[in-house]
Image (cartoon, rainbow, N blue to C red; front, side, top):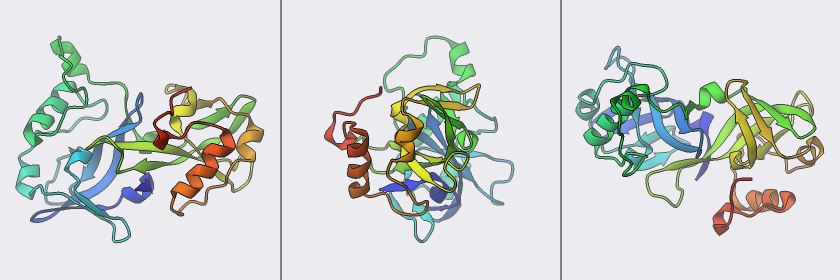
Length: 242
């Protein structure tokens, strides 16, 4: 299902014996745009603890009712490895969490050769909350900013969620208009400058299919979007970064 990140945030996480917490943020890989973790606010029952959970532990969702379900118990979450720091999450913490919950580490069978690498963490790990507001630059100038993200919570690869689209607010160029652009179309992302470079002209974006925030993104809309830009469709297995 394609769902806005802002609609996922705020959903409660319902464990097998009660509410674990609420989704505060999504942490994603800035290189692949896969969502690695849900940043969960545990409320008052685990004071002083920050919890991150892999999408792999989510077994069901009902966004209209604002909840996600997991088989985890509150005790499992309480006894999980501590996580207090800000980004980046250390490799060691990720390894400990993966082992504790028995979910697959995102780096698969890669071997971490140095303790220093484990301590430093992965600089590609990004927050949707932090990236919201990044400027969007077309080939001929600025066109707007990132307002939201459209997440696919049922992609082909088991357990992984993917950010399919950036929701671009063009109000500083086209008042009140929103459009969708796949992040894989970005020519570059300048994290330090908080800017995304898109290889499209402002006119192309201006005339593209409009997106109304809050509306469902269905396959019919996606067909129109990809046909307009003349790009390979990701569900055909031929899409690639440009």
